[in-house]
Amino acid sequence: MKAIIGHIILNVKEFNESELFYDKLLTEMGFEINHVSEGEFGIIKSYKQGEHNLYIRLDKIKKANNLFAMYD
Image: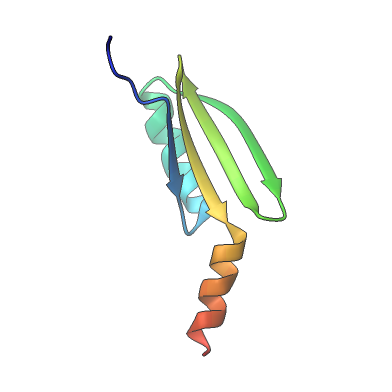
């Protein structure tokens, strides 16, 4: 049986900049933009190619905690 990677999640610090970069890169590689969802915990965008899924994610809680840590 051939091994495959089904899902990869990339955590990003700047969602808008990362989204522009990965939109261009991944669509050139044959991925389709699948969906974007935003909630109180963060933003996630998925790209799909066949059975393979790649996600970019901004964790709002982690980002907020990092900002508070700068002022301790």
